[in-house]
Every structure is written in C-alpha cells, then in structure tokens.
Length: 460
Ligand SMILES: *[C@@H]1O[C@H](CO)[C@@H](O)[C@H](O)[C@H]1NC(C)=O
Ligand SMILES: *[C@@H]1O[C@H](CO)[C@@H](O)[C@H](O)[C@H]1NC(C)=O
Ligand SMILES: *[C@@H]1O[C@H](CO)[C@@H](O)[C@H](O)[C@H]1NC(C)=O
Ligand SMILES: *[C@@H]1O[C@H](CO)[C@@H](O)[C@H](O)[C@H]1NC(C)=O
Ligand SMILES: *[C@@H]1O[C@H](CO)[C@@H](O)[C@H](O)[C@H]1NC(C)=O
Ligand SMILES: *[C@@H]1O[C@H](CO)[C@@H](O)[C@H](O)[C@H]1NC(C)=O
Ligand SMILES: *[C@@H]1O[C@H](CO)[C@@H](O)[C@H](O)[C@H]1NC(C)=O
Image (cartoon, rainbow, N blue to C red; front, side):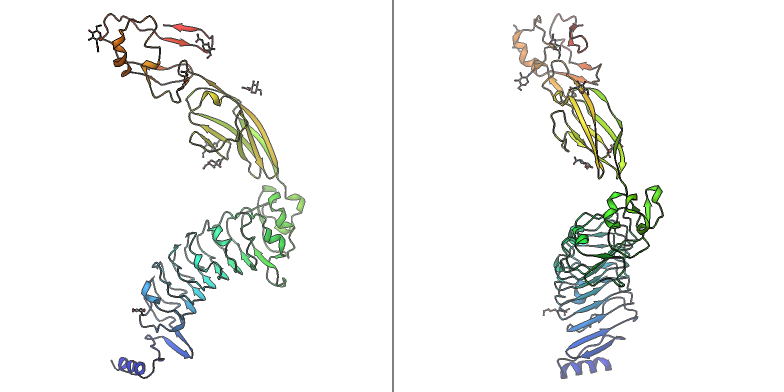
C-alpha cells in the first residue's frame, strides 16, 4: 500500500516517471526506458509495464501465452526479448501496436507454428529470432509486414520439413538466414537470386540430398566459414546433410572454398568421403535406362488401363508420355501421368488406341520406349463412353430386331425399359433386360453380336 502511494506520488509529480513492475529492474536513461525482468518467475507479461518503454527484456521466465493486451500501445518499443520462456501460444495480433520494434527474440520457447496473424503490425522489424522452438509450419504470409526490412531471420533448431520458400525469396534486405538443424528436404532452384544482401546462409544439419545452383552463388564468391572470407562474399554452410554427390552438385564442388567437413551420403562409392576431397570427374550422373515397360496392351473400350514404363538412372528419372497423336499427356479427369512412369487412363476411348511413347528424363539425358494400346470397340455401342451405364433399349437393335412384331404403339413404353450391360471384359459381358411378358407369344430372345476375331455377325 505504501509502495503504491509512492508510485502514485511519482506519477503525479512527473509525467515522465516510470512504473517498475515488482522484482524487475528499470532504467530511465532519458529519453528511453528499459525494463529488465530476468529470472523473476513471471507467469505472464506484467500488466504494469510503462507503455513508453523502449527496451523490454523478459527472458528466463515461465510465460506461456502472449496476449493482445500485453504489448498494447507500446509504439516506442525497439527491443523485445522473450527468450527462454515456455511460450506456446501467441494470440493473433499480439504485436500489432509495436510499429517501432526492431528486434524480437522468441528463441527457446515452445512455439509449434507461425500463422499469418502472429507477427502482423511489425512493420519495422529487423531481427526475428525464432530458434530452438518446435516450429513445423510457417504460413506463407507470416513475414509480409517486414518482408523488406528484416535483416536477420533465425529459424534454426526447429522441426521444419518445408518452409515457405517463396517468402524467403522476397526478403530483400536479409543479411543472415539461419535454417540449420531442421528437417528440410528440398531447396527450390533460384530462390536466393534476389537476395542481394545475403551474406550468411546456414543450412547445416538438414535432410538435403541436393542443393540447386543459384544465380546468387555464381555472382559472388561463396565460402564455408566467415573466418578470412572477403566482406562481399557469401558464407554458405551445408555440412551435416545427406548429400547425393552426382553431377548435379558439380557446381558446388567448383566453388572457391576452404575445406569444411561436408561429406557425401551417396552414391555408395562416395559414401562418407569428404566433399571437397572428391575429384570433379567423380561427380557423375547416369542417363535413364528403361528397365520395364508394358509392351502391348489390349483393352475393351470404356475400361481403365495402366501403361507402365520403369526407368533407372542417376538422378532418378521422371517419366512423361506422348499420345499416339503426338501430344504430351497431361493430368486430366481421364488421364493421370505419374513421375514414376505409370500412365492411368480411366475410361479408354476407341480413339486412344495406337502407340504411346514414354520418355524418361534426368539431368544426364533421356530415353524413350513404345507401348502399343489396342482398344476394342464394343459392337453397336460406339457412341457410349461408359458401358457400365444403362443403355436405352430403343437405341439398341438387340431388343428390336427387324423381324419383331411389336405393335408400333408399344414403342413409347419400350423406351422406358432398359437394357443393362455389366461385368464387361474383353471376352465376356452380362446383358440384362426386363421381361417382356406383356407381349404375347414371346418364346425366345435373339442376341446378335459382332466378333472382332472373325468379323462375322453371330446370332444366338
Ligand atoms: C491503449 O490506448 C487506448 C487509447 O488511448 C486505451 O483505451 C487503452 O486502454 C490502452 N491500452 C493499454 C493496455 O494501455
Ligand atoms: C500428375 O499428378 C501427379 C500426382 O499429383 C504428379 O506427380 C505428376 O507429376 C503429374 N503429372 C503431370 C504431367 O503434371
Ligand atoms: C506409380 O505411382 C502411382 C501413384 O502413386 C502408383 O499407383 C503406381 O503403382 C506407381 N507405379 C509403380 C510402377 O510404382
Ligand atoms: C505400333 O508400333 C509397332 C511397332 O513398333 C507397329 O508394328 C504397330 O503397327 C504400331 N501400331 C500403330 C497403331 O501404329
Ligand atoms: C453417334 O452419335 C452421333 C451424334 O450423337 C450420331 O450422329 C452418330 O450417328 C452416332 N453413331 C452411331 C454409330 O450410333
Ligand atoms: C396398342 O394397340 C392395341 C391394339 O392395336 C390396343 O388394344 C392397346 O390399347 C394399345 N396400347 C396403347 C398403350 O395405346
Ligand atoms: C463387325 O465389326 C467390324 C469391325 O468393327 C466391321 O468392320 C464390320 O463391318 C462389322 N460387321 C458387321 C456385320 O457389322
């Protein structure tokens, strides 16, 4: 009570006086306020923080949640440190008022994801430190408010398998990017090409098998360690990745670098060897070789079919198909062309028939093979796309042979009856039709079909 009275007294005597939360130490080095609350057992951000504070350090506490009101109106805040707490939840727009914030340290907490609302409003942010969390997902728009200002982005020691690369590629002022000690499997080609200020890129200890060449890397010298490297160079670290040392990594081997401890994980003959000790000519690729394929396939029109073409090579080849009319087969509702060489056609048409060409390609070349598809047309049903569907009896002459004596006024009601063809294979079919007991005198039905084997009409 006594303390509160003193506080109030100070406030009333000087508008610039500062409230200092319990157990914290506060400095008023005019014109900026600094509040230091380290190892004070805080469970949440103290509500009594002076809104004019410029530097707020709350590390080594037990804060679990950052709420919208915690930093409301703190437009003068420049530096915010929340390292080594237990923060697992950041409410949307928690930092929204921090228009002047330059540095946000959230390392060693329990964040699992970053959403688009988390860092909204941080329009002057330069340093974002998110290392040592459990982040597995970052929404693509999360860094939009400081995409042009951020200089230092640290995402190391998290659980990232993938990151929004397109966002990384737009960080135009970025100088340091830490992506090390994650589970990243893939880096897209050319993603760093516009990061002209990039000086340090750490991708150590991830799951990268390859690192694509990037225009940035050929423009400026790249080194393994900052020690002794020229100022205008890029320090690129990628040790501790399961590198696949084939011709695709030749560009990296050719860079001017001091020795570092990167090793190759494959191919078998280079496993465990030091990257920089392997001769350039040992970084080889193998052109694709087609090992298995369907040579000829015969199918009934309307059925689904899988054409297969399996290829080996280094790097793993991908397979594309050319249809008999010379067009590249794309993914449609009726066709699916997988990279592994399988082409699925879900409802074959008679016009699909002919020779398909599969093309297996990789960095070292390509290889092609022919697969012949024979599509057998179903007699009298040339117009239908799916034979499992019902066929109007009036369209088929199966039920209305020329010599039939059905009275003409029966035609309409006959139209309502259906003939169904089911369980279709290349050599058998089940044909069902409703009984015609209302027509007097029917003793038998006649089925007429045209066999593709002998081209003869057969009556049964
Ligand atoms: C922030 O400022 C608004 C308007 O001045 C005021 O209503 C609100 O109570 C302030 N919030 C805090 C947490 O100081
Ligand atoms: C078709 O889709 C599959 C699976 O989504 C994909 O792997 C394949 O690359 C696609 N093929 C083409 C030709 O785009
Ligand atoms: C290729 O991939 C597709 C879809 O993943 C799969 O259905 C098919 O069996 C695969 N083919 C081969 C030859 O592995
Ligand atoms: C497909 O190719 C084979 C030989 O490769 C040829 O005998 C056959 O006539 C071709 N089929 C068609 C429909 O062009
Ligand atoms: C197929 O349908 C078209 C129009 O729908 C028609 O002109 C053609 O005669 C039909 N062909 C057969 C064999 O029924
Ligand atoms: C069809 O014609 C017969 C006699 O020709 C007649 O008895 C019957 O009522 C007619 N049926 C219909 C549906 O018109
Ligand atoms: C039987 O089918 C073949 C091929 O579809 C055709 O050329 C032939 O004219 C048909 N025969 C009759 C009698 O419809």
